[in-house]
Image 1: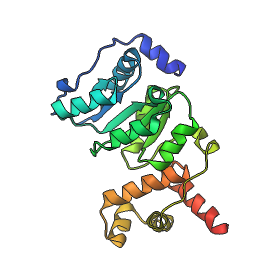
Image 2 (image 1 turned 60 degrees about the horizontal axis):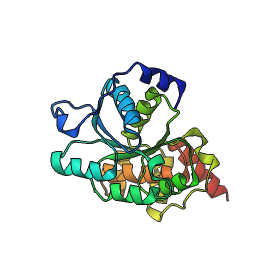
Image 3 (image 1 turned 180 degrees about the vertical axis):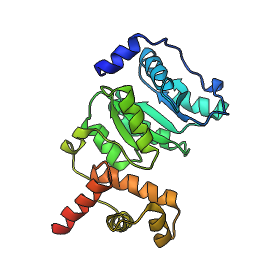
Image 4 (image 1 turned 180 degrees about the horizontal axis):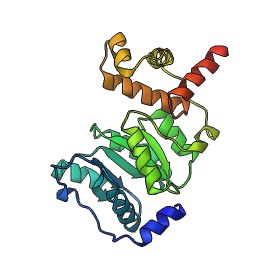
Length: 227
């Protein structure tokens, strides 16, 4: 974890946030912390809760506890932060379990380092972002805000690890429209799909190409055309 985050943590009052204490009248971005040591989750939760527009809807030790929380309290959850260091060797199974909830939340992986296992999972599953634990709380919140706009966020060193996964024909079609400057709404109209579907395709494109924004994705398309 970065020095900035450690320094901020040392002065924070650590409490566990329960899904049952959610104020439904507030419309901040609601996050759920899953996995990792309770002390670390409490510290991160306090830091996130202190940021404008952010709140922690729940902090649980396991996916089983998260499932129970969803079942008992039905909390609104915009982003799930999964500590994948707790699931080494079983990262794919943990992610598949979360995605099987079929709920409308963004999934962000928290990790100490970018391993091949994490890259493969992010390249083959609906992962919206990967954030290193050395990041500051401001960097984490900025990443969450960017992800909520429909973009994927990956560490700067991401492109140094495994190769990108090939795009589907539909994803190639979407990327070509992106390269022509069309907005999500315009692409949705041309393809006769919903704007949210376009957002999903673009997020998948970013993940599969190992890029972080439209400019990098378009550059990848140009490179592939040159080949």
